[in-house]
Each structure stands twice: as structure tokens, then as C-alpha cells.
Amino acid sequence: MNRNKILVVSLTSFITTLFFSSSAHAMHISEGILPFNWAALWFAVTAPFVALGLRHLNLLAKEDLSMKPLVGLIAAVVFVVSCMPIPVPTAGTCSHPCGTGIAAILVGPFVSVLVAAVALLIQALFLAHGGLSTLGANIISMGVAGSFAGWLVFRGMRKIGASLAVAGFMAGLLTDWATYITTSVELASGIRGSEPFSPLFWKILLAFIPTQLPLGILEGAMTAGMVVLLYKKRPDLLVKMKVLRAGEVAA
Amino acid sequence: MHHHFHPHTHDPSRLLVRLDARVKLLSALTLLVMVISCRGTLFPLLVAGLCMIVCVTTGMRLKALAMRFVEPLFIAVTVLLLKLFFAGTVPLFSWQIFGIHVVGHLDGLKEGLLIASRIGGAVSLVALLGFSTPFTDLMAALAWLRVPWGLIEVALFAWRYLFLLFDDAQVVYCAQKNRLGYAGYRRGLRSFGTLAGALVIKAFDNSQTVTTAMVQRGYDGNLPLMRHRPFRFAEVAVAILFVAGMGLFWQM
Image 1 (cartoon, rainbow over the protein chains, first blue to last red):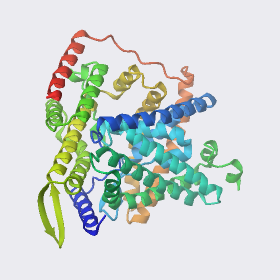
Image 2 (image 1 turned 180 degrees about the vertical axis):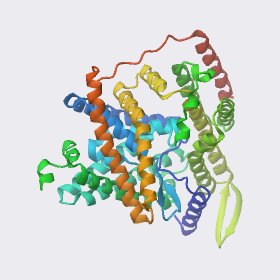
Image 3 (image 1 turned 60 degrees about the horizontal axis):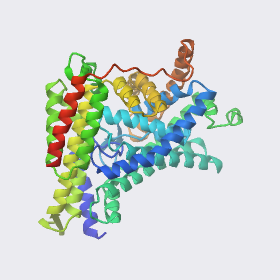
Image 4 (image 1 turned 30 degrees about the vertical axis):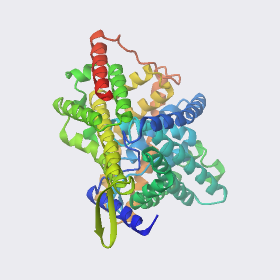
């Protein structure tokens, strides 16, 4: 991309954030933006992940009857957290975190896909964040990419000896950025028309940088804060959800 | 957020609210498919206009309707600008801004307008569906459409406790704000993390209490299925005629 195009994209994103200050949201693909064939494809890609999530949830519920209400309540927490405004310094707007990072850390990536699906469904129906036709695409970006990135990073960081705060921060950060990158892929492939994929993908990625880059850092800080608070106040919950071993809490 | 879930939005005295949720859901999904597969801008704009008129005339507040359009509008404008400046080959206008040559393309503008109109039509349609149908009825309709029951159960649990958690979150947020918990980014982030963590703890505790209460009432890990009343011929016939009529516009 040449210098002029980069400048125009920056100008475009600046103007849009200026006109719509206080309205930049966690990056969901809006209702109606994807043509039918792409919307259907993302639903098909989502199906096995949702099926595996349901299988995991049913196995967990057989051991502990409180798991279904718990997953429902975590979905409600994700929904509420994603409705709370947090300021994004570089864009001068308020934005909203995804919240799936903490869900993946607590209930695992597969069940976290269900959490994201439920939160996205309620958001689509009542807040017009995301949409019904784009539910499949949004589940893939926020539920699958976000949850798996967050869970893998958290587990990986803990394995190499990182503290809960650092592992939580990195998990939140990469959950958000993975969601953002996947959304850009979905958006570019869906709206490119007759254009080649790659240039449009980079333009979309650049256009959303002013909000999504700092938002990732904010989400990382939020996730770290949540994990640390749980460790201080209710370490038993982290043990129950197999985030920590009982010995780690005693130590 | 509460204005989106105002109880008067599902006032049963309104005809649209009383319609069978399955009929509304199937009609809305069919129209949604038509909107997103449409190749012209007129059909999505027609759907948007109709849905907005019905929303406003049946009591949806303008502020609530406008707020639903804020995020989709933001995305629609971004896509429109991206398409205008970076897609297409037929020049429509050109500007010199600080020495940069900026060209808007006619075919890019058309593509952008098509996507923006689809967004408008689809968002209005789903806004009308959400406005006229209680959540539990929608979940029952989805269960009838064979959406996995486990997913519906989780959604129903989430819906039941969403307002409780939201009220708790607002109380904690106000308390933090009054104590300067959001004065400065660093402090604000710490407060936000604490708020979110407190909600997770509440969720855990509530799930235990709820499970104990439900087990005492015979809960064995599965919620009982929701029952539907039989379809009414008039409702189904009107819905089919309406969707077929819209189908004719879609083909034009």
C-alpha cells in the first residue's frame, strides 16, 4: 500500500471515530453486512465448535449440576462486561471489551464458545451489536478465535512460570487482538466483491487500529484484574475451575 | 442499557406482540435472507422503512431505535468510505488534500451503498423482531426450530440473571465512581477489573444458590421443554402472504 492510501485510511478512521465518538464497540460484524453465501459459510464453520461445546458442557453437567446455571451466569457476566464503557485514549471514544478471555480461562475454550454464542445472540437481538445473519461469523471471531487464543496463551504462560496477572494480561490482550484480526479476515472476505482479498484486509485492519489496538491492552488489564481479584478473594473458585491446583493456593 | 429491555416494549395488548413467535421468527429469517442476498438497494431500504414505521407506530421509543442504529451506522459509514476510496475503477471525483490525491469511485460508491442499505434493512428487521417478541418466546421458537436445547438452556439462565448482574454492576460502578475509582486511566482500569471480578464471584455464588433451589424442586440437569400453542391459521396465512409479497419486490 502506498503512502497516500495509508494516509487516506488513517484520515477515514479518524473522521469516523470523530463523528461517532462514544460509539465504537467491541468489534462485531454488523447485521446485514455479509452476503448470504458468506453468512451461511460461517454458520457451517461454527457448527462443530458449538456441538463440541455442548458435548463438553453436558459432560461437566453430569459431574456437577451447577455447571449449566454457572455457564449461563458467566454468559450474563460477559454480556454485562461487554456493555460497560471503557475509555480508549488514542481514539477519544468509549469502547467495550469482549470478555471471552476470562470465560475461556474459567470454563475452557469449548464451553466459552457457548458463552460467546449466548452473549452474542442477546446482543444481536436487543442491542444491534453484531446480528443474527452474522452470528456465525461473530461466534468464530469472538467465541472460537478469541477463546482459544486466550486459553492457549493463559495456559502457555502459566506453564513457563508467568504470574497470574501476567498470564491474565496476555490472555486478555491476545483474545481481543485475535478477535479483531479474525473479524478483519471475515469482513474483507465478505465485502471484497471483485477486489483481491489481501489489500482490503490490510485496509480494514488499519481502519480499526485506533480503537482495537489500545482496547486490547485495556482488555488485558481488565482480565488480569479479574484473575487477581479471584485469586485474592475466592481462590477456591479458581481451584474448582481447574485454573489453579490446590497446592498453588496453599503456597 | 435498560431502555432496550423496557417491559412496555413487550406489551401483550399490541397485536404484533401477540403473534406466534414461531411465525414472527420464520418470517423475519426469510426476509433477512432476502435482504442479505439482494443485489439492489431498493429492497433493503423498503424493508428498513417498513420495519421502522411499524416500530415507531407500535410504541418503540425513537431514542431506543436510534441507539440501536449507532453501531451499525458506524460500521456502514466505515465500509462506505473504504469502498468509495479503495474499490472500483470509474472515477467520480478527485480532491487534493495536503498534497495527497484522493479519488472517489462511482462503482465503489454503488457497492458501498448496497452494503449500507443491507445493513439498514437487516438491522431494522431484527430490531422489530426483538421489540415485538419476548426473549423466552423467541427461545421457545428457536427450540421448535431444533436449535440445540443445551444452548437454549444456557441462554435462558443468562437472560434470567442478566438484569440482576447488570443492577449489581451499576451499583458497584457508581460506588467506585463516587470514590474517584475512574479518575485516571490506570485507576479506572484497576476499578474495572475489580468490578468484572466481583461480577464473576457473584455469578459463581448465584449459580450454587440457584442449583440448590432448583434441585429441591426436582431439577435433574435439564430444564423442561417449553410448550407451544397450536398454530393459528389466520396468522400463518397472513405471514405467508406478506413474505410472498415481499418476495415479489425482492425479485424485481
